[in-house]
Image 1 (cartoon, one colour):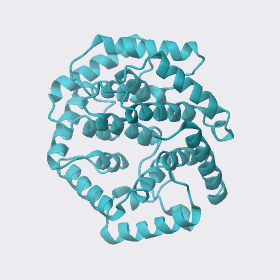
Image 2: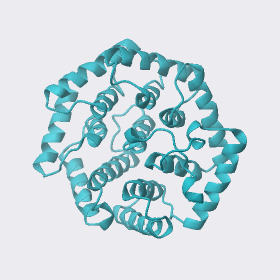
Image 3: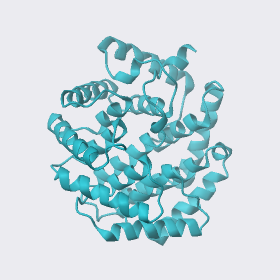
Image 4: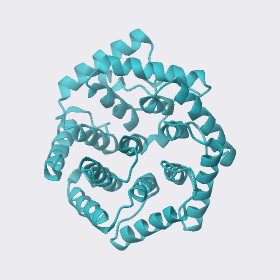
Amino acid sequence: MMEKDYFITLLQQNYDTMSLFFSAEMTPAIKIPLAVHYSFSRETFNGPQFEAQMKNLQRKVVKQSLLEFFSNVSNKSVLSYKVSAHLLLHEQTDQELNRLAQNEAYLDSVGFEASSYQSIAAIFLLDEAHAKRAKILHKEMKKQHHFLTGKDDIPYAVLLTREPVNAQLQAQTMRCYYDELVAQNFKRGDALQAMSQLLTLYNADFEPIVIDYVSAICTYLKRENIKIRRKFYPFIAMLALAQANEEVLNEIIRMNKELMTLPMFSIEPSLALMTATQFVLQQLIEREALQQFSDSLLFLQALNMNDFLQDAKITFAFNIFDFLNG
């Protein structure tokens, strides 16, 4: 199990190394999530090695015509670097690259439109049957929330359909959670929809107590002067699913305060709270302190997917290799 002090030290080290290696165009909003990703993997970032690995990966992608977002020219983004890190840190990069390409083909075959979100969904897809279940749920989600449901919801549809589901019931429950949360003064929009989707992770039936958990968590965090931004909504859902008590929340608050002392979070303070939440929840899983989950892997996938998507709302198609030649 990773110690908190070690993680924080490695995180700062990785960020500082990235700051020296990358140009000034690479903002903290990109460097921090990338540094977090490396640190959670217990890896030390090496600039020249990263560059060589990226060029090698680019050759493989171009040769095999894989992954839509690797071949489109647009802005650099946190999502592009996070996906590249996922591949580079994988124990079997070639096999993972082929798996993602096959999964994207499955998603294409059931009618999903190609997008960066589809590429993220491919990471969490099991097989073709899974893709079909995800498409059915996505259609039901769109019936409940026509204007909010789009490409950015594809990863959630995939996550929530690892096993057969009652798609109509689950989509209706998502809408019920959304409406109840609006009544609790949560701000409407994509982040709230993502939150309502995640709340159905283990149970497609509407449970009023889940709203109580969400409300209690927010009240406690606000009382501790934690500002809750919309992008943190999905993480609140994860805390509610974990039935996080005061001890867990206090652990997150303490770590958040420690992270906020690091200069790297001065421009992006909301990322400190997300990082602290992800670290504490993953530690609880590793300590088997969240045994109420029927599938801990599913919980971790949901947590990690939120980490991938936290800034994806502003990204679409992009080229993750343009900085190598810029």
